[in-house]
Image 1 (cartoon, rainbow, N blue to C red):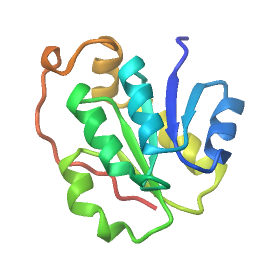
Image 2: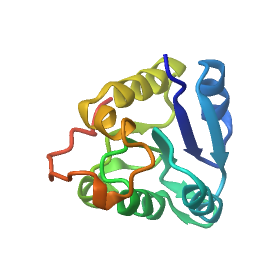
Image 3: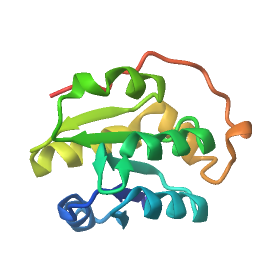
Length: 146
């Protein structure tokens, strides 16, 4: 079994703690600036990104992730109305959206689902490949679930 590397971008460390307890290798960033620096240093298997961060929008982080890795799963989390971000999130092919508050089970299942998705599996095999090396196909995202 390979180790799954997760970047959690959230100013609340609860998600980081939960995923660490589930034996994922977790790095946390609490701001857009920290997340962008982390993304430049290495790739991750899954990104869990909060919509509202102290210095900006998690969608800006998702946009940077998508510009580097077209298929890596991004899970967007938020305590705000999902309809406000729906269009931009769909364009960024967000893998899943979780509305806060959510349970431990919900976040763990979302990460497991993201890791097991066919697009994640194809990109995990090319984890450090730049965006140009990964075949991109626009797909209809199914990221809205409760």
